[in-house]
Length: 184
Image (cartoon, rainbow, N blue to C red; front, top):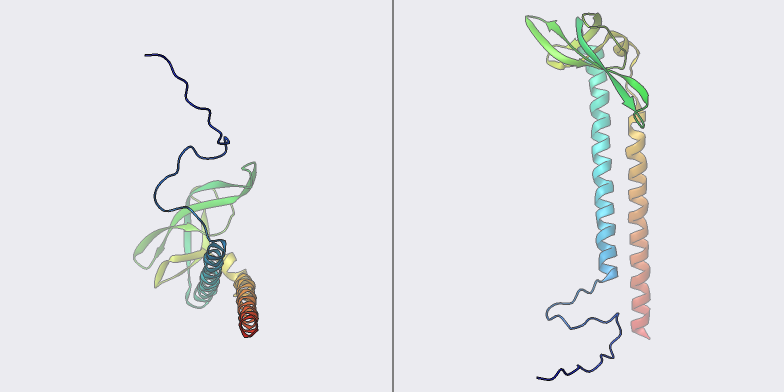
């Protein structure tokens, strides 16, 4: 059988060799934009709620320690150095230990970033109904509830309101343009 050459293709190299059957992969940019905007709005709303709840919880814990807390002696078991940034600078210490409250002994981390030697005793304050809520006496003495915990959720809420207002204004503007275009 003699060798026969096939005809030269006139198709450019960028064109596909053959067509695939089935659904195309067209993307509606407007629909994708609406979905993305919806995801951004929902994310902002969730962050506002989460950061507000965290702020309320932090202030409630400070109040509980100051009003319901009882003095305890915290015994340090160990402290580990924490690294910050790129890992080349110290960012404080995380200490663990135990304390007795009533007839019970509790092992909890100690808030703060001070370094203590193993076996050191630290004046602390614990809440009898919540043994995980313990802090050094110094932190309890100096810490106060603050409205600052609501700054971030407030800013995020303002951004959410502005975005929603822009959406409403834009949708009304588009609706008016479409109504006027249909009337002519």
